[in-house]
Amino acid sequence: MRSPKSEKKTILAIVGMPGAGKTEVASYLSVKGLLLVRFGEETDRALMEKGLPLTEQHEREYREQLRKEQGMAVYAKRAKPRIAQVLQQHDAVIIDGLYSWEEYTFLKGEFPDLVLVCVIANPSVRYERLKNRKIRPLSIEEARQRDIDEIEKLSKGGPIAIADYFIENNGSLGELSKKVDALLQRLGIA
Image 1 (cartoon, rainbow, N blue to C red):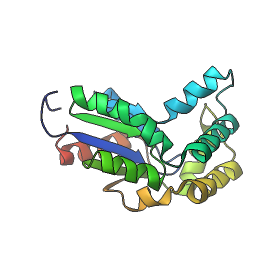
Image 2: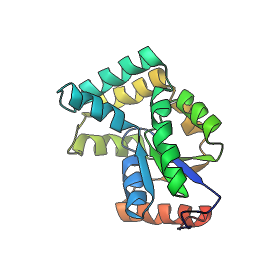
Image 3: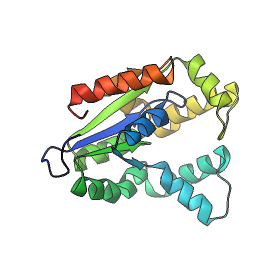
C-alpha cells in the first residue's frame, strides 16, 4: 500500500446485485488495511436511534423514505464528509453500498478518480447465498423481488453497467480473494 501522504488517491466503490459478494470484497479489502465507508451505516444508526431491529423490512422502509424525502443521492451526500476525511489521512478508501445512478454521478463529481468495481454472480448462486446468510436471510422469492425493486426503484443498473472492473464470484471465498488481489495489483494498490 502507498504511503499516507502520496498524491494519487484511490476511491473504489463496490457495486453489484444482492448476494454477489460486495460485502465479502469490502471486508477483505478492509482486512488488507484499506479503510471502508459503508453507506448502510446511516440506516443502521437511524434504526438503532428509533429502537427498531435491523430487519430487511425496517431497513427497506427507512431507505425508501429517506430517498423519497431527500433524493436518490442522499446516502452519497451523507457519506461525502467521511470519504473526504479518510482521504485526508490515507491514499485509498473503499465505498460499500453505492446503489443508484444519482449516488454515482454525485460522487463522481466530487471525487473524479472514483472507480467502480462490480462484483457479479449468477442469480441462482446469489439467491442461495441470500437464503443461507445468518443476518437478514431472504427466501428465493424475496431475493428475486429485491433484485427487481433495486433495479426499478434505485436506478441500480447504471453503476453496474458502466463499472470500470468486474469480479466474477460464483466460487469460493479463496477464489474471490485471489481475484481481488489481482485487481489490487492491476490498480497498483497491493
